[in-house]
Length: 305
Image (cartoon, rainbow, N blue to C red; front, side, top):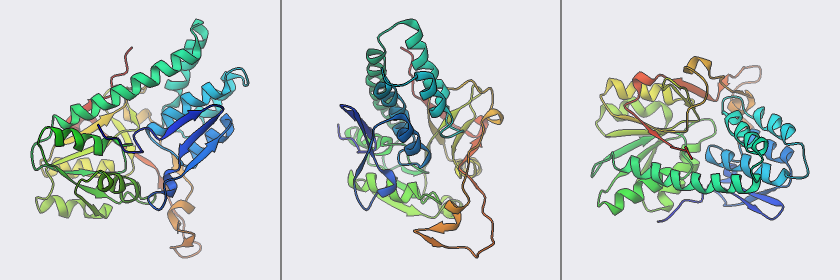
């Protein structure tokens, strides 16, 4: 099975964590080095890695901190790195292992091994929902799962292709998803975020598959801003809308998920150049909440041990 570099973008080498710098893609495939939890939290807040990369980084950060740092302080710093992502679910897990007296390094490494296997299973489950010649619309980036889904389809003799939204303002769709799909040999077409309704009305899309950064207990999900409007459009055009989900948090509904508001300059400045007049304000909620009733099927990442 072939894997995208984004499938497992963080690795621990001795006393250094190497992180695939997603902000440098597709121009160059480069890694940054992290040597303590403060640098790890900075990499998270600066979006050097996202999605599953942040999850892996959390666990490797605890491994790096063993015997050197107060793990409660490490957990507090991680929990405040990005508000919408349920890091506390992960840090509480680690602190629980520590409190139980279980060997923390073995618990963490065992969990990561299971996570890798379950992500592969999640991609296979998604592929089983697809048919030959399906054209998938996706939004943002799901850390290597889209090319893996397509690879499973290829093994099943189901040829599929993709439409990918730009995903402004960070352009994860055009920079990351389009890059990894093309790199894996799958057909991919990039569209602007505001073209989805037209493309759907032309009958070019058969399915929508997106990821989720946060899953509430009632099935509501928080994902990259723009996901909600795609779900509404998919409902209108009677297109199945599938979500690759993490385990649920303690949030009862999507209304309890705190939405991260990122700096307005990230919206007003592109490649170092301001693209809006001086004095104009920007508003950048990084996520939106899609209600469960707009989701055709949740494709779960089952992490029960």
